[in-house]
Structure formats: structure tokens, C-alpha cells
Image (cartoon, rainbow, N blue to C red; front, side):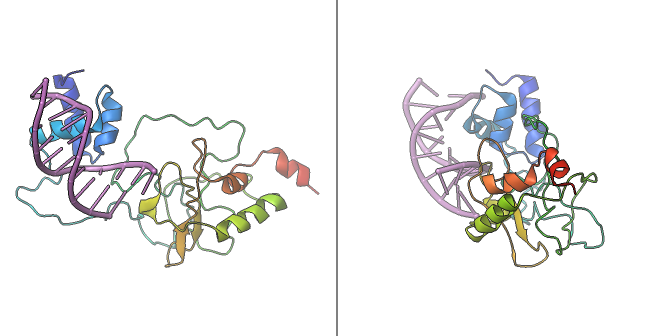
Length: 205
DNA sequence: CCCTGATTCGC
DNA sequence: GCGAATCAGG
């Protein structure tokens, strides 16, 4: 692969959008992130912040949640999966096959019943977000005692992103235990996050 | 360990 | 010009 005008254009666009070199490399294909970085430098657009001779204003302000607004009754959908990066427009990634599970991305649903809801974007329909098997619950409680208590920046694609605690306080962290098979959560949290629709029917009484 | 960008240097 | 290897950091 070579740096055609088109590819360079994509590079420029994504770089200016704040995409990481590896993401850009993934998008372009046929190049490594090193290649992307090298090209970026050769193009002389290393400093993303369009500031000539500028300094670094912000460092990792990026991902901070929209606001600690407790007013808006919106359950946070996804606590920003990957590392710390500003915008995440529309990376064409695998849709993640979610069969007959419940909500695609429940985030702070069941666990905190008294806690306030963080704040996020969408996710209005919260269907069968209740009634988890006692086993699953026990498992979760157990697991949360061993949680790695990762911060937002420490989350990766293979760490459990289940939020624990109150986002508005210091008592907030992410599970961080190893998640598997492309799931966003560890086994225990997957258990409470994705419920078969049959569960409720079963427990109906 | 996962990830980031920055630099170097043989090609 | 290119990018793998390496470096420096989170």
C-alpha cells in the first residue's frame, strides 16, 4: 500500500478528528500505526491542536463525562470503552453479535438501585432490567470485592467495564477484571448485564 | 499488560 | 519518502 491522495486525506481527516494512529492504521489497512505516525510527522501535522507554536493546554480532559448533572434521568450507556481519546465519531467496527440478549449495552442498570444515575447519551428502553438470578447476583457481589478498581483510562478492550459506585464521588471505579470474548464485562457482570428474556417469565408469580 | 505518540535510521 | 524498531510515557 502506498500513500495515495485519498489515503492521505483520510489520514489527515482522522488525525484532525483526534483518532489515534492505530485506529487510523486500522481504518486504512495495509499500514501499521508506525507508518501512520511516520507519515503524520512527514506531513508536518504532528500537533493536532491547531495551534501554531502552541503549548499543551489540556492533557487528558478528553473523556470526562458530559456532566455530573444529576437532573437528567439518563442512564449512562457506555463508559467510554477504549483508552482516553476525545471523540469517537463512528468507527466502523464489528457490531458485536448480540443474539437474543436483552439490552445491547446496559451500563449502570441493576446494581445501583439507590444510586443516582450518572449521565450519558441515549438508552431509553430498559426492558427486562430487573430480576437477576440470585446466583448471578451473588457472583457479582463476590467479584466486586475483587475488582481491580480501574480508572477510566485504565480500561481496555479486555477489561470489564462494569461501573461500580457513584460516579459523582471518589467511590467510583470500574470492575477491571478480565473480560472475555469481546464482551464488555467479566463473566459475572455479563451474567447480570445480559439476561435471557425467559428469565422474567420464569420468575413470574 | 494494554495502550499512546516521537524518534531514529536503514532502506 | 517510507516504516520497523525503538524510545518514552500513561
